Image 1 (cartoon, one colour):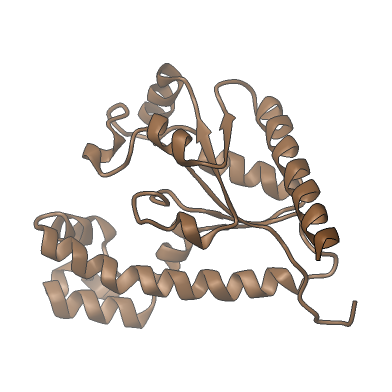
Image 2 (cartoon, rainbow, N blue to C red):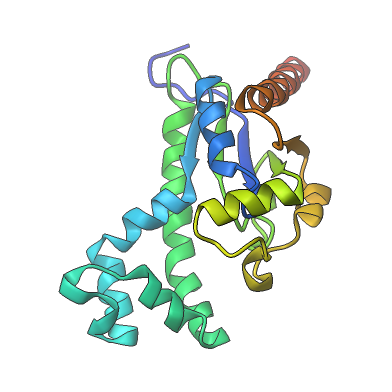
Length: 211
């Protein structure tokens, strides 16, 4: 393959409910040879940019960026105060996230050796109607008791799917291409994810042979 040439790398959306262990799964996939990206991390970077800071200050005033740094909690309070405010923020952030993800995917397709897959952790994947963007999707699920314990450990008061912003994990599982259980150990999770990557390799190989 010529240096810098793009190869076909499966593009995968990873999602799951609060406390299911999406970030743990993303880290495991990285260890298994996938290129990984968290949209939460992208959003964090965007909030540190002048473009987003200036936009939210113009919309809601300087109190959302004390000292010149965006206070995400303050932004969230204003964004969720009314549907039109939330729609405005999503209209600002989501296209910027999409552009970052597209650039990252292009870079992943040119890596040598090629990664096993290019996987993007997207908490609101189905809620935002983004499933068509990806070749396949993975939903990480866990027992309710395990999810609740993890959520409380992170300072959340139980699992309530963020006040119904998110679909239930059962609905996410129904919509996903693959479902991976994460109620046990990290080793068990990694083994299950390795199986998914193997299926993706087989699928990609078959498609390449059919060309």
